[in-house]
Length: 109
Image (cartoon, rainbow, N blue to C red; front, side):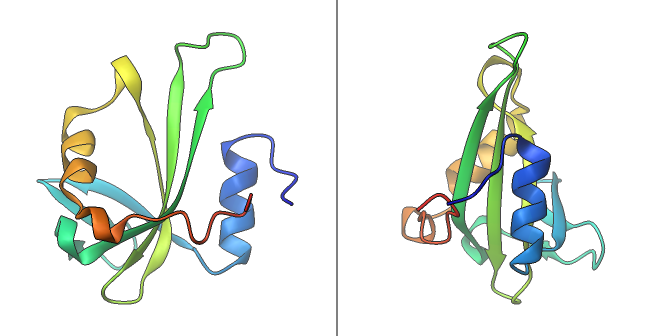
């Protein structure tokens, strides 16, 4: 369905679908970079994820999380995964309840 080739293409497509917030992990919470709202893992739903390998170096791996929160904020978080993953980010996403993780909004489905 989607003609996305890289992370930026996917982010643009999701932004067009209303996933406009940009998130980061800080102090064991998901933070909306604009509203500054902070979320615990149980406040977050991952509705799609996309993994990428670097074109020139396959060990450069990243993952794009497509997120919805309990305050109706929708957006994305792009981060490294694999050996170069940030520990705090990995730990946060591992704490999200399994019932809050799906692929229901994946643009490739």
